[in-house]
Image (cartoon, rainbow, N blue to C red; front, side, top):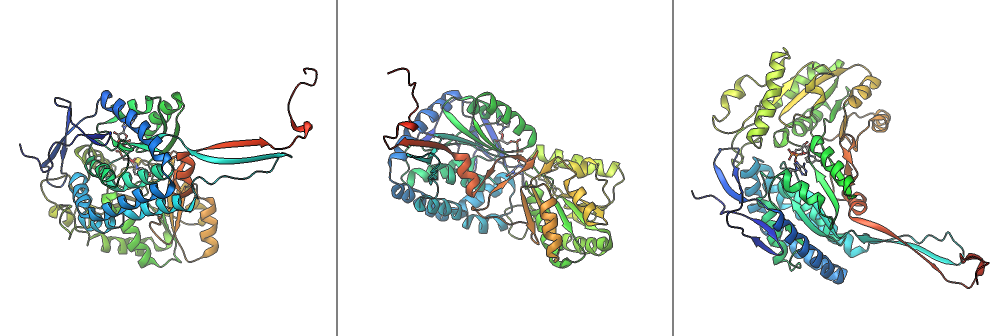
Length: 498
Ligand code: NAD
């Protein structure tokens, strides 16, 4: 069989690590169910090779001047720009991310790399504090790299996940071992090669292929000092426990069930348009998707009429067709999971504002397509309002007062993001204060920048990434104290031993 992409392997120590006879995984295009590639799975030998080379490369990396490291990052960012269309195509066929999104977004991917090379260039990363707290001493802190950091990644945004992890990991002076999702390793494998073209030392960026079993082996390796995991809560708990057992510094970026709260004093049309995007973008497979619409009872009819009118215009189909707003969900597993919630809604008698009708008839017969679905009057305790579905399904819940909106917003185990739509600044500030979530977005479905920390409260995670979050995750603080006077009162010693 001829595959679109010939037999990829892991990328370690600066080259593709071809191992004849190793276990393979078949990648499927969820838009067409065609096989894309067979990927060789990394084994323990490959993992050990990646660690040896990462240790060597990290030493070389830190011996380079910041200016030389910046040059490599800058060159890499221009190569990402050069190949952005190819990367967009790879991710669109791998996980069904619509090409109408991947093309413009991937043209912009390099801004993450540039932000971090700028941070490195400015000296902001390794900046410490001068803490004059003990007389006759110079006491100060520095920030040092951890050494090797492993990033274990999900499938919903493969190239962005790679870039957003690798840029701060390297800028902070570490080497990286990246474990992309088993269903979407191709863009990461391509970008690891780009690092070689950019002049990085061999082994500075390694990509290991495979599923959770290689993920666990990575965490158990002594030489890997930090783990940044992005994925589901259930896997996150295992990763957190295993990291703890091996005393690893760990960041957990987990799931969400974010409230999208609409007040009568908002610009309703703007709120409806942006909420629609925030719910159904990438077929709802976004950690911070606004999958619980909390709407004031006084405007619920009007708002839902607007939302339904807009939802009817969503075109669903092959991710490579630029006319489509939504592609399929990413895999058979995801399709079964998402449709089981639709079956549950039907069997519970929950009315769907928009799902079964005309749109279902227009979906392609082959591929993992799920219609955009708006479920009305969902009970707050229903699994539809409590569990992360990670698909194009939104639950609508009404409220009467600000206090009730806050209670409903906080009534899940998650706390990743919250979107609040109101023109009343007092109300906005009060809700921003009271809602337990790592990110609060006012009058927008999504606000993001590499400088803005992103992390979850409650079960949505531990720690954060971006900006100061990544610096704290990927460096460790060293405290240096030097006594610089002959002042005998500050020297610790036993006076009766001379
Ligand atoms: P997942 O938890 O199934 O897998 C994530 C990664 O962990 C994969 O690479 C997988 O191979 C690996 N893995 C699985 N078992 C493991 C184990 N025991 N030890 C180590 N690694 C293991 O998640 P997914 O289905 O790939 O991704 C979807 C989830 O990711 C959703 O819950 C979504 O909300 C979350 N997500 C969160 C963020 C965020 O920033 N908070 C961003 C994107 C996605």
